[in-house]
Image (cartoon, rainbow, N blue to C red; front, top):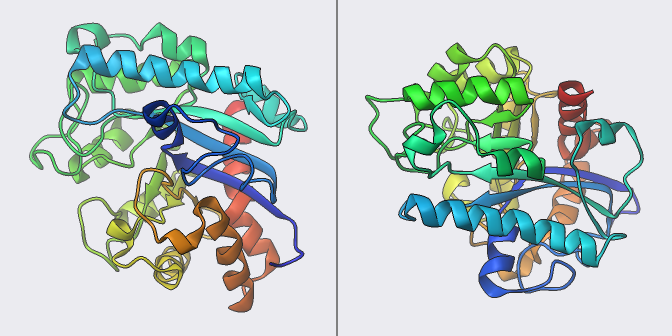
Amino acid sequence: MSAVCMRLFDLHCDTLFECVKYDCSIMHNACHVDMERGKSFSPWYQCFAAWVRDKTPPQTAAAQIETMLRRAYAFEAAHPDAFHVLQSGAELAFSPPAACTAILTVENCKMDEKITVGSLPQSWIDAGVKMISLTWDGENAWAQGCRGDPRCGLTASGREAVRQMETRHILPDAAHLNRRGFWELLEVTARPIVVSHTASAMLHPIARNLTDAQFCAVRERGGLVGLSLCPEHLGAPTLSRMIAHLEQFLSLGGEKTVALGCDLDGIEIPTAFGGIRVLETLYEQLLKRNYAESLADDIFFRNAYRFFTKQYI
């Protein structure tokens, strides 16, 4: 392992879902992410998604999201030196109080449309949710996901929700939106957007990945794109394939746009990767390919940190 100190700001993992599902600790577990394996990153900012499946009924989905958000605060109460939940964006200006700073997000607003019209759930706001992915792969009350009807995009409720996010300083995440929904989101909001975990459709042409035009639109808006480690997004379960997608985004002028959004605990990766520790190997491989340390640090940390700091401070 390189002696270079690695800083990490990762835009997406599903570890909260796994910890609730298997009732396991954030300190040591059989998931991809725990505090023990992440200790080589300092500072370490990690977006933890409260994710629900498309087939989950709306009332059940709401309860599951609440449970995951509460679990994050339970982890903080039990391990304050290891795990801290970011409540105010202003905290980004100060040294992290714990080894891992958790940024709470919601993935898939599988809610009853009658509840979501005109407002966001107050409990999400109270919990300090900083980013919301409007959909997962299918359809919900706010929008069509990447496997939904390509003729439809954001609903009226979804458009109003995005406006509410703006007033609450919550970032919209376009990761799972279909093409039409992506472009409609850019029409609704004038602010930069995040695509938290994705890859290049130029290299692997699936609906879940960004076209060059989409990536450039995010870049021109001053937004952020997290590169996924998911084999389904990359087309192969290898780091060399991930780097190929990275280089495609860099070729589009993405040096200050691309970040990491690995999707750990939401994907299947080879056991030999060692969960989050695979990022240590990725960092080494970038340096061996003659990436400047400054560019590697931009990808691993600085682009995302700069973006979030600009949005909240």
